[in-house]
Image (tube, rainbow, N blue to C red; front, side, top):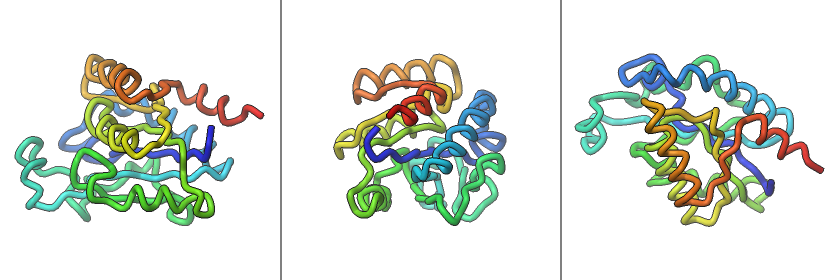
Length: 188
């Protein structure tokens, strides 16, 4: 895996237990804790790509209602994955994609002493929406993509499965479990 970065999308209070809470989201917390812990141990950067909406984000709030409002409890990363602010990065977003009008691409290109990230390990919520839109923008910027199958989730099993299939077939993402990703990192 070439210069990897873990990108965790929208593991926020509003999406796990709040207004738009997905009951299926809770089952990915354990695998994500394992992935983040291993990334920290290996010195792999971790980026949290989080919704942080303003009331005027009408294209999103009209569809989903006000959620993950900037500065609110609902827009905070869940306690179980609380970012380590001494080493993790938080990039706020206002649309489905972690790249659209954010500093994510600049951050990724500055990592690894300016050599830049090359492989993105995507996980979080929702497989078929924010993870997929982030993957699309990453693909068009030339990043290699790995998606944690047990570290992503959606409102339904069907949405999750469809999202994984699209990520693999449309964007060439390798779909692996967290344990497979960790094994890949430990290969000589």
